[in-house]
Image (cartoon, rainbow, N blue to C red; front, top):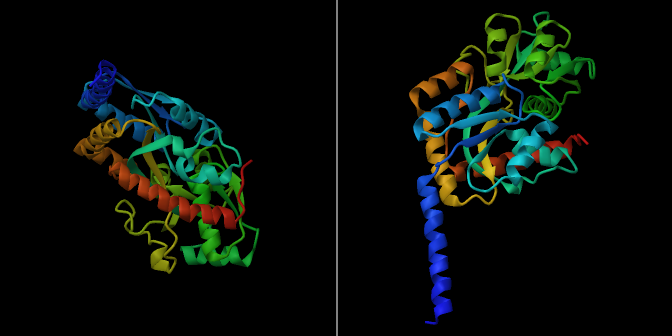
Length: 322
């Protein structure tokens, strides 16, 4: 074997073993965790709760940074362009990973440049109406909306948000025509529904729980496969004969697309351990999140299924945001 070949081979082996050593030592420095929303929301709560546990488990600082804007695109493009070493992570929801590519003709990032690590949790959607509504259940509400096409407005946490698309799914399944009124976040939208300015919205349990429990809004049905343990008296849409009506904000962790599989596996292991920590799990459930913590392959598979389902709806309804 010539000297050059020997050196080249040593170089290859060196690279392979150093990549392996890097993954084995991961994380060996602070992790930057980007949240594409303002502080105080569900996505922010989830990131901070899990990051705190991740930091305690790894002995490394985890710095959570809020970078809202562009319907999550600002934080997503920064993550996609970051060093592919697992030290920049993003809280990504279905807006980032599923809806945006179908809603915008041009995006500043490509979903292929983001690698799924784990789904942290699901925020199931609930149909709520204001206190003045005469609808005592979802069937009443649908009948009332059918009786006056275009006469009922609905609020959302923003155009292209999971809340918006959950209501579009209801409209599509029930054959309704309602007018969308987007807000900047679930909280202001919910306040308007509670105040009677807008009749209805789809809201996640985390944002809506306090309003529902105090009777400021009425929960009519949950867009989930099963009833929610926090709202055992509220039926699912499936119980009302609408089997396809399942919608949730799905919040996971993604990293730059070319991050080595070993690093993704190491990060996945740490994140899943953090989510499964009994104290973290309890905080998540109390907040209104269904904790998940799955493999990166399971998360990728879920994203593929969600993409097929929602892209069809977005195309059929011709929803665009640019």
